[in-house]
Image (cartoon, rainbow, N blue to C red; front, side, top):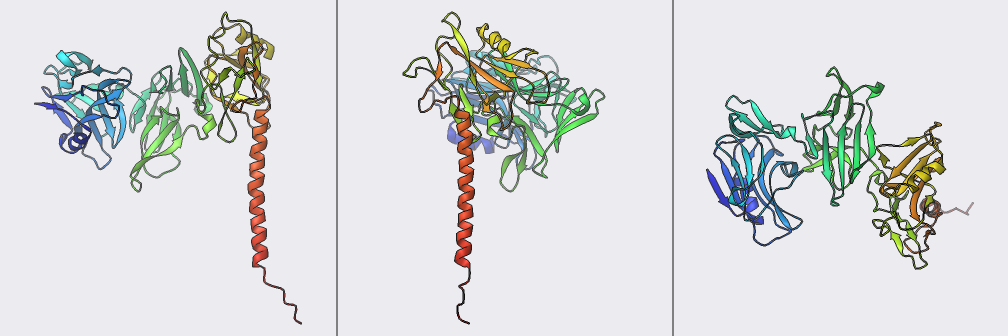
Length: 467
């Protein structure tokens, strides 16, 4: 059975209601979408193939053509309602022209092809007795033989979403890519804890973690109806990250590519949308990329630029990617302290029991180091002194009032100062932001008090002077 289709934005709606009608397709099936000759950023071509027999929202599998950075990508996708929960091209896009073709070959290999039968993606299941492609009620897309034995499944290739009932073993992860090709987020399952990472080049920085009680080891995690369940060595549940906002069962866990936040989501029949029942990070300033590079997230959840300059006209770094030309071999450098600042990012390695001066020196002698964070241990109530080195100036936020012992330092060309420009910040800017916050609070409560007193006087009954 073959279909040759040109899918436009209008025809997508037609195919979403007429092309798919069952939960499986068999060997020999193929479907072809024509790819537009002219690139259009607003174009999406999609033909739904199969769906589950469930109440809305149900699972659907589709062949899709989408515009990505000047090219057209051809991929096989799984949707839960309108939410994309799996994509064959998540890690490696298959770019094509003229046609995008899906074929389940007679020898059981599922393939995506371009012109001249050029194969861009395949399951590699030839000769394994595959008879059909099927979508299960869990959202798992599987290739099965005549005895319904699974030969390939999408659950073994996680992307940025984990579905209800899906398991992730130790050393596996979910990955979400940002619009910046040099950074991405990941949710990783390690033996001792669960972690969220921001990866920049070859370096990883953690920004959230969860440890099971009593330091117990993790074997795998599974998404249950009431939370993310953590299992130990005996395959018994040892912990759970619970759903806290709804009596509705959870439907999926997602690592959001826009913010890097991890969330558990349920379907709200009243609103007809998916809503978060849990989020790992609850405040803006705890997000890894809340602000641009060389920016600070303040108590007001707003971003303020660290405007560093080496000339009186303010040339230098102004909330951009950094100083042009780098530091290696470009003259002397120094470390500039930002009092009252810290970073939500933690490098994979650190130096312990060192002085602040030694921490500065480590960064100064490292060409790739752009910033350093020194902790004297006072913030955690310990005597452990720690030094963290960074190849990025990101994730900076104000420290909470009253917390001391943290010193954030930025590498700059010698003679650099914090400029007086409108978008710049001086050494006292963090204190000033706190003062402004306090003044705003006083004004709000003062105005409220004045209003209540004025209203009380207005409503007071007049005094009767007659006796």
